[in-house]
Length: 381
Image 1 (spheres, rainbow, N blue to C red):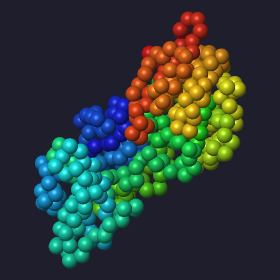
Image 2 (cartoon, one colour):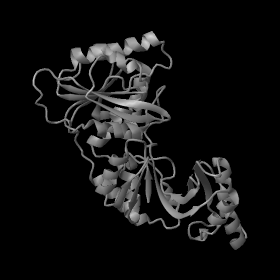
Image 3 (spheres, helix red, strand yellow):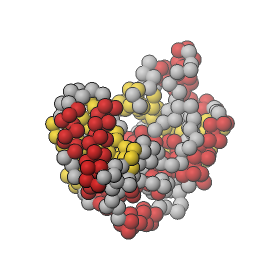
C-alpha cells in the first residue's frame, strides 16, 4: 500500500505506520510505501494523523499515450472491485510524461473501467465525483503508471470537526506534523497565541487524549468496497475508543484577538470532543500572559497577504519582543510562509525546517527562550 502525506512529514508517517504493525516500510517523496493486511489498512485510515490518503495499488505499467493507458487499465479485472450498480470517480496526477493533462488521463481511465464492466454485464457504473463507491487513483510520472484503489475516500485531513475555518486555516495533517516535529511531550503546557480557527490546539488535544482522528469521521472509502469487513472495522474502532484517555495530561491554551474566529475555534473544538480540554481566550498576543515555563509555543502568524510590508515587519518584530519578554523557558515554534518577514523576529533560530503549506514553501522556525543554564530535558535538540 501507499500512504500519501505532505513534504517533510514522511518519517513521521512511517513511524505511525510502524506502530500499527505495518511492514516493509519505505518513506518516499510525499508518501510512504508499506505492507499490511485489511486490519492495517483500516487502522492506517483511522489512526494516522499525518496521512492524506491510503492507496492500494493494483497494477503498474509503462505508458506514454492515451491508447496505451486505456488498454492497460482495461486489462484489470474490474469485476473484482466493482459492480455495475456502484459509482466511481477517478483522480489522476500526471507529470513529466507523454500524457500531460490529468483530466484527459482520468477520462481514459474512466472509459476503460466502464467499457469493461458494460461489455461483461450489459450495464455500466455511473460517475459520482463527490461520494463515489469506488475512488480510483492514477499516478503517472515519467511514463510509469500506477493504478490504485483509494481506501480513504475523502482526504484524511478532513477530520470532520472543522466545518468552521478562519481566513487562512492550516491543514490538519500539516498541523499534526508540526506538533510532532516540535517534540512536544504532551506533558508541558502548549500555547498557540494566534490560534485562529483552532487547528493547532485541537490537534494537540486529540494527541494528548489519544483520540484517533478517524473516530471523528463518519465515512471511509473502504466501507464501500466489495471486500469491506464490517466486523473487522468495528474491532479497529472499538480498540481506538479503548485507547482514549479520559483525563487531559496537560494544559493547552489558544488565544486570538479576533472574537469571531475564536467563536469558530470553540465550535470546532466541541465537534472534535475536546472543547473542555482547551482554554480559549480573546487577547492580542502582545498582552497575553502564558503559564510559567517550561512550555511549548506553536504559532502560525499571518503571512502578510493583506498587510503592507511595514505592517508585517512590525507584526513579526512584536512577536519576537513578546517571546523575549514573556516566554522564558519556552521553546517557541513559528510556522510561516513569509521568508522575508521572519527576519524581523530578531531572535536566533536553533532549527529551521522546510515544509509546504499548499504550494507555498514555508519554514518551521525553532527559538529557545532559555535564560541561564539549559537544563530542560523534555525538548529535543
